[in-house]
Image 1 (cartoon, one colour):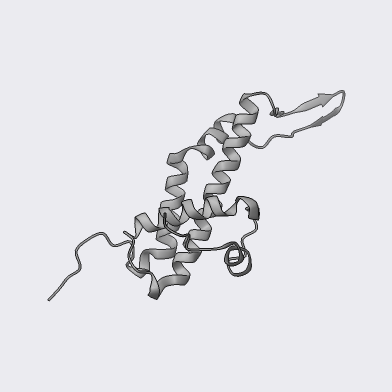
Image 2 (image 1 turned 90 degrees about the vertical axis):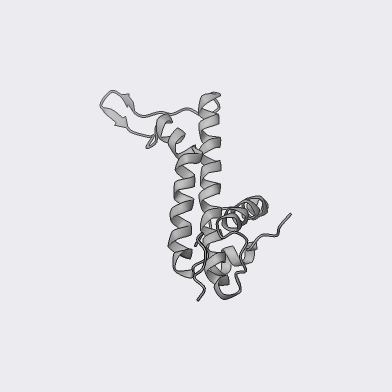
Length: 139
């Protein structure tokens, strides 16, 4: 098994990530690193280590958000959590929910999150050449 490109200290101190708790970090960091590694075809990252680490941190956040949305959706479907869109008692009313089940299904989907990951990889790594899949020109 390959190692992660990042550790929790890098995520919190350098990238300034705050989303994922330390006890869940390693699982998501390994998955994010594998996504980066697969997209750069396991090329050496020596010249672009910061860009690769930052891309990995951003993907950790995407994967963790997907996990949170999947958990929320599962809790709503199983009845452990309720979606209350509005409530009215006499003249008093309030709106509570800002997300629907359909929204959660979309936010939880692999298709949606893979698009976010692809955009993130391009944002951080496109100019590095690490995403290039063609044959290098040799004279």
